Each structure stands twice: as C-alpha cells, then as structure tokens.
Length: 229
Image: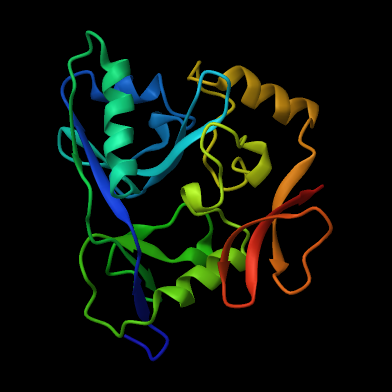
C-alpha cells in the first residue's frame, strides 16, 4: 500500500443476478455490449435501451460460476431493471433476482481489490469487498468522474429520452458495433455512423454555464451538462 491508495463507497448501488443455461445468450441479445468480451478477469460496461434506442439502464456485468451479476443503480431502479429483464425472458431458461442495496467500492492505487473499471483507467477498480485501506468521501470519486465526462446512470442520462451518442458511450466501452442485433441497435448505429448527435455531455463550471445548457449531476463547483456539440 502507498500513501495514495484509497477507496470511496459508491452511492445507490444494486445487484441483479441472472442464472440458468440461457443466461449468456439472453444478455447477448439484449445489451449494447458483446458478452464475448466478458472474461473472469474483467468487467463489461453496457446498457439496456428501449426499442427506439433510448437509454433505460446502465450497469457493469460480472461473470460468476454459472451466473452473471449486474452492478446497477440501486433501490427502485434495480427492481425496475429486474422487471424489465423479466419481460424479455419469455421461454428462456433464466432466473432473475435483485438486491436493491449493495455495497460497491471504487478503489484507487490498490489492484488487490476488485477489477478495473472498464470506462477509463483513471476510474480505478470496482470491488464488492471493502478494502483495508483509507477511505475518502464519495465526492472525491464523483469529481473525478465528472472531470472525465463520464455519466452516472440516471443522474446524467434521462430515462427513455437520452441516446448513447449524447454521452459518447462508445468511447466508454459500453457499445459493440460488431456484435449481432440487440434492442435499440438500429438508432444507436445510425447516429454513430452518420454523426447525427447535436448535443453531448460536457464538464461545466456551474457558475458559468454555457447558453441553453441542461445541467445534470454536480459536485462542488463542477457538473455535467448537455450542451451543443
């Protein structure tokens, strides 16, 4: 351990467990990322979209022994995600369960805990085990995230309204353009290849907002806002 090692406890996290012989194919047909990229030593960042390609949920997919875990927003959002997945299960051999409140930790400088956050190297590691290193306030993680212009779920992306292009979700590793079809793929691909996005999430000084900016999450004197590209 060095004097720069620390962790922050993340707020409002839940967990979805998906098991059954069809679990992998079930997720592959729904989410924006490619399950083939998920291994035991990494985490997959992905989203579930509406059929119109609008944001519904984002989450981190972990591979277990015969099951998958989705580290997602907690509370009612976790229950809503489980319900939505259940609507798509139809005749698939899957079992879906949800925990509304779980402890998730962002760890910096100490690779012994968790797996790398796939969105950006500066976002450290994600762990379900509380590290035995100093803890710092959630706001330290939040400011780092905002400076990197990384959205925090529905704090920054409007449910059933925001597109993947608004937050450059492909640059955060949330989207595969090579895999087969998934829900909302057509609009997502069209916006990407045709460059149709007019507004994007950017870090802003909340005391000096750009004209017509739509402010989303904030921490201290900075925030993320939807601004014209």
